[in-house]
Image (cartoon, rainbow, N blue to C red):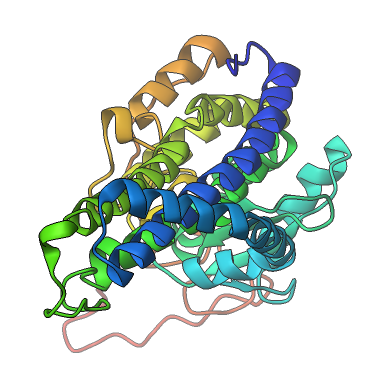
Amino acid sequence: MFRAYGLYSHIRANRLRSFFLLVGFVLLLHALMYSFALLYEAFSEDAPFNIIAHRAWEDLWRGWPIAMAAAAVWFFIAYFIHQKLIDFATGAGGVSREEAPRLYNLLENLCISRGIPVPALKIIQDDAANAYASGIRDGHYSVTVTRGLLNLLNDAEIEAVLAHELTHIRNRDVQVMVIAVIFAGIFAFVGDLMFRNWNFPFGFSPRRSSERDDRNGGGAGLAIIVALLIIALSWGVSVLIRFAISRSREYLADAGSVELTKNPDAMISALRKIESHASIPDMPSRMHGFFIESPAVHPEAGLFATHPSVDDRIAALVKFAGGMDLPVLPQREAPQLSNPQPSFLPSDGRSPLDPPAPPSPPGPWGRA
């Protein structure tokens, strides 16, 4: 249903993905609410499981308006502060034209030549070479690059990377990523709290009285297990959503970069340089899918990969865009000349129009 066969169908598919992600958020929110109701009822009284489950269902039925209100509030908050959350997670900060004139000129030239609105520019002060785009609505998109990318790549390669990120914006890829990570990502956050940080329910949970007679109950333990399974399922679904977002977006963004710059070789050489300098060890895993190449120290592979391999992306550029996969040569400094003056000028610093200097007097053994 969501397979895209062209640029416009890809954009349309991304809009459908965004819609279903939001609908899925509401459904998973109700599942999460039911799991909390199960936990509450299980810790309140050790009744048979069917009674606990029925009470939890009644709690959900009474509380679903609260869940819908919570979803609406979260959508409202995320709509306006998602960029601040992303900047905080990645360590990105604004940069002025005076601080990065080269970057501004390259981006503006690309946007003006194609009639694309100029997004905001931001920089991550890190020696890694990477970049990403973010935003969910016109006028609020941004492109972020690392300091290492500016130091490592030449102008043509930086232009190719910027064109790649502009294509993500044009194709609405960034909209899908923001919704998957920020809007629907609340479930992964709750799952992390439950299973990674709080050690819940062991050691940090309400306690039932040890004096209660459990002979007529026995359903609380099962209810707790079911509740934790629902939370785990919600967490797992939210993670799979991130990985289920089509990896074809990177191929299309690479192709869009070539379309904007008419320079497939620059995109290929940029990918080769980024491939060995992309790692940002402190980057949260939920942000990896935003970047042009995964910033993970050990990038995911196979089903859990957020990006196709660089080799596959370059092979596509060579096959379909006519690029050349040349080895990246180490940068060498220009040799320093021992005598920078042209050879026809006098070596003693005189003007060529001055008369020749008088010969030096002979030494004790005659002239040399």
